[in-house]
Amino acid sequence: MKVHRATFVVLLASLTLPLTFATRAAEPPAPTPEQQAMMQAWEKAARVGPEHKRLAEQLAGNWTTRQSMWIDDKTPPAQSAGRSVHTPILDGRQIRMDFNGDFQGQPFEGTGLMGYDNVASQYVGTWTDNMVTGIVVGQGQYDAGKRTYTMHNVMSDPMHPGQQTRMRETLQVVDADHLVQEMFENHQGKEVRVLRIEYTRER
Image (tube, rainbow, N blue to C red; front, side, top):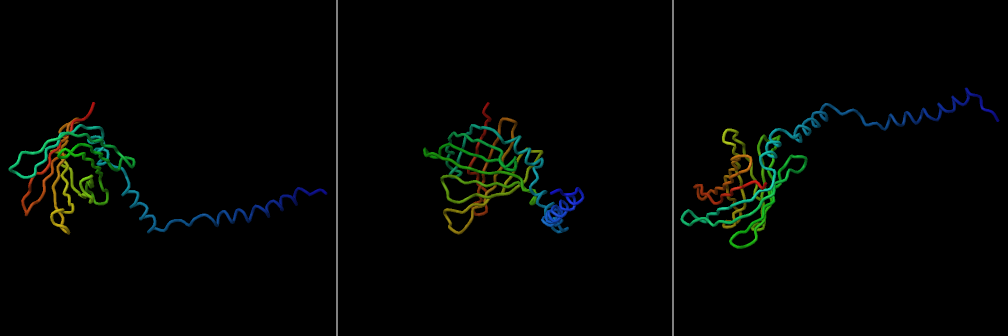
């Protein structure tokens, strides 16, 4: 049985036309202005910017460390050595810091994150280690003239459950191969230095 060419074209059209309509119907609707604004806000919030790139340039790498820890202002600091590995993660949005050393003769290890929050326009950080079960959280700014990050942190106070200890932390970028980090706790309205870490980049 022969099928005329014209008849074949009509049959083919009748089969493909519903499929074309179904494909178009399956396409998602165009986003509303509110949805477009939301997508733009999230894209801006997630964007890797100059602050993230500077953190990576200054902090990423392997570092040997020298720690000085003060129990009070009348006792010489306890000193120890360690090593810290700083790795950019999440496409450069955060710097992960993995530290290993010792504290009063006991193994000490900790992990922190430092990044820049585009929405808050602040540097943000966290820290936890094997001496605590909580997480230190902080936020702060960078002084380009002093090449120093200043973070204001809070953590649970072991001596006063239910309360928090406030701390000021500074991280000075001395040069490409040296960093100095210092921690100051607030005790009854008085700022007391409790920690100093000197970093030297491994070559």
